[in-house]
Length: 332
Image (cartoon, rainbow, N blue to C red; front, side, top):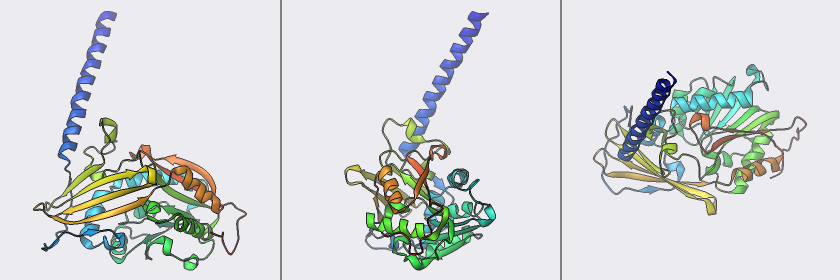
């Protein structure tokens, strides 16, 4: 009887290994094709001419681009997962929900802002231009959206001292700030605008480990595809219902603490519409922590986002000490 049981278990193990082998092969085949359909109702009129390369993020966000990245870059599942982690580690037990007031830098098309509006009594999203602001207001109707341009250009007088209980920097927005001095200026403003005991949260990345693939280009939701590949994948493609598509390419440059993320936008006929160059300044996480603490914050916790299938990313959570009530705010 024991021999029969042992044989059965062995056969089951062999069966699982065979299924796993073919499943991984199927995933790699899908990724080799590198295609994924996304619900897309937007159709843009075609124009002729050369395909420009845009190097200024403020020029990217027209209707054509916003409609595409809304579905491709910000899937609902990841927004909910990250927001749940944020709630558990930065909200729960620290403030009554009725008293929470959150400023979100990195509102993008509004999907994370909409999730955040369910966590915080007041949620305010900062966006860089009118097109994003309109999309944000449509997707996150319970939140307030402010079109103020880049946060590092906002003066300390933009909000009164002690306005917010939470200041959240989402997506890669912290790394789009051009210089260390500008980053410190943003942190100093956060210190001034937060109430004593308030939380600063930065979504931080490890440039050599995080997954640069567009979420909607991953064939199986909730699975980190990089774990099943022999070589880490740096590019991906998303096809839309009208036949147009976006192809992305990520190039980390760790020796210079920066990276380049390029987007190529194509028409349905395969011709290139235009390219975008996103240039990120990515200091190591310990440098980010040191920069923030130098302004007066205390580092409370680091929360890995691996459960949200975001490897190499963490929420760095900081607290403004209760005794810090300087009207002038910290000096940069």
